[in-house]
Amino acid sequence: EAGVAQSPRYKIIEKRQSVAFWCNPISGHATLYWYQQILGQGPKLLIQFQNNGVVDDSQLPKDRFSAERLKGVDSTLKIQPAKLEDSAVYLCASSSGQILSSYNSPLHFGNGTRLTVT
Amino acid sequence: TQLLEQSPQFLSIQEGENLTVYCNSSSVFSSLQWYRQEPGEGPVLLVTVVTGGEVKKLKRLTFQFGDARKDSSLHITAAQPGDTGLYLCAGARNYGQNFVFGPGTRLSVLP
Image (tube, rainbow over all chains, first blue to last red; front, side, top):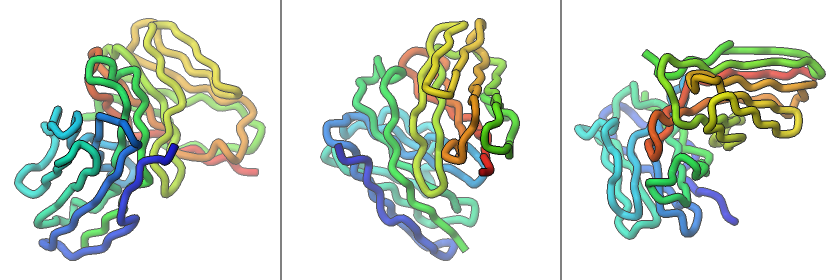
């Protein structure tokens, strides 16, 4: 099966600019996640979708970050305006499990988008 | 403060050596996962442990979940250069909750 696809692979922007990342999950996976991984740290969950609904966005900085999954398949994550501390790898992951069984459902990660804010 | 602590932060060993890395918390987890992440790639799931005291083996890798479900270890026997990567543990405190990741142990196996 095809894996989780993300684009672009790399992005360099200046602070206060905007940027968008795209994710195409594994076909049939209902759950989609966006994670932020700062250098030297583990991934931190930003937002979780179940189909096209938001399940958890408690750690999403909503003043500058937004995400959508309009048709329950692809998703975009946007940052506007970007800050220096947003420099990180943004990982998209999907899983097949329903919410109640998500602890047993492995996360399948894409290769991420490396964002550098200068 | 980190919910999950991992040690050591960095480890560099020679091919053929054995090693153990640790994942610790003051919280109890309903389940815990280990992932390996190679440079430029996303994490890949290695194992999920759910029962206190559980031991799982994956070829040369042995995973153990602590009896109290607060800690876990990963032991690699006869490490190979292909084992090089960032080893992440991730715990879910309650059934159905999202997993929280630790900061990882960066392993380098030299030929």
